[in-house]
Image (cartoon, rainbow, N blue to C red):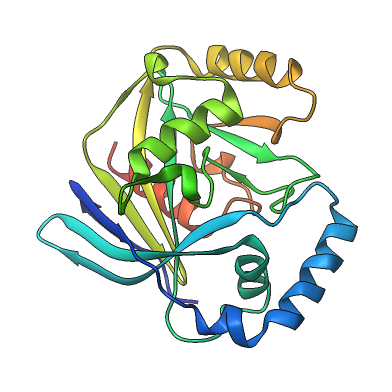
Length: 234
């Protein structure tokens, strides 16, 4: 497997356009059957609208791409079937939470979610709530997902200006380091208290990563590649 490539950029230029995705059209019946099977396994997943990307370009400190709308069922089938068809990527924002004492704070996805058991920073596949006019607002998506998953808000962190774009196969994770004004243990306690107040939280556990020994096989490669780079630069 090709190692992830990390691009550090200052600008995101992500246009949203009405593009027909041949994969979703040509495999519609098979996609519907696949999603029905997944819903039997995890009844809480739903077929909302999401955004996928194409034509990624990194140049002069900018990441540019074009996004288009599709349904979650098509995205899930595309992912589960090994990303078939012409080049499309799943490009999403991630808030790389870093505590005041240097720990990275990650969440473990709950059993009812499509990524059950996976451990990573707060994030989500972009959807229509993240569109502003004809542009995809990844910074806004990061803040929204962070609050939805953890209860933390923009008042709890200082966002660094650069974006670390980790290209790992058909995934591009746009990570922004969010420096918390609290220790790792305090952050975990805050988030756990918020999770306990919810009827069906997206996260089932909070993990603190203070060194390489804290990395787990259930963390996506783009997450571990980013953390490894961060620890190497200290």
